[in-house]
Amino acid sequence: MKYITKSIGGVLTIMMLLIFGLKACDNAQIDEANKLNDEAGVILEKENDLADKSNQLLDELLGDNLTKVEDVKAYKEKNKSKFDELISLIGQVERLGAESTDKYEQASKLKVSEKYKEYLGIKIQEIKKRTDAHKLVVPFIKEFLQTNDVDKINKLMEDFNQQTADIAKEADKLSEKARQLAKDNPNVIKN
Image (cartoon, rainbow, N blue to C red; front, side, top):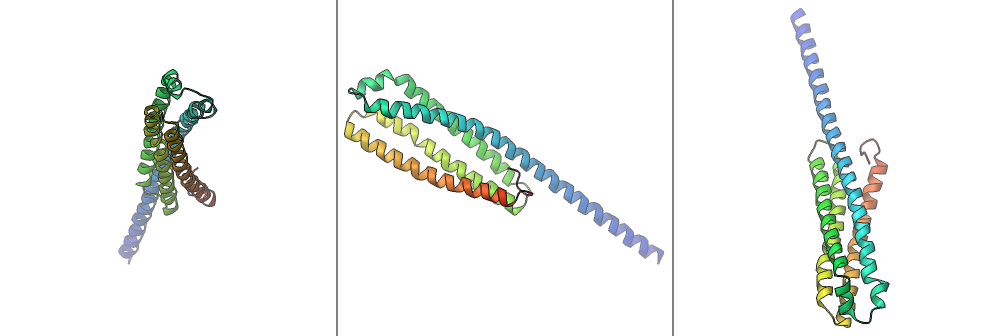
């Protein structure tokens, strides 16, 4: 009888150690996911700053200043360095978008709750959408720089504005969905 009691006690002890060990592994995975989430957030802040800067430059180049121009070709030549800067900024934004997406993808592969995985998946979709919008800028600028026909330029700008607005609307919906999921699950999702 003593042997059975000792065996049951030993088995219970081993089971408790396994449970606590698994819990420690899960906590380590959650901590790692939170760390990756934080790193992605820092990258996104840099990306947003550069995106804001590129949007301001795009507005400067193709907004009111362009409507006042009589010679579009001369305007393009005069502002060539600014267009080059814009293309460079967009490249940086795309690179940072890829980096933040990678961090979220790494976190989503860890052992975290289904709600956390859902949140990470939504963030990945959102960033990819925003990156898709940025990827439209460089081809648009290059085509704009090669076109001197005002009607073609107007159509090009109209199409570009519509495409980016549609993508931004989808990305904003995903952002709101992720924000709401984090709000509804504050003990699960570190935001």
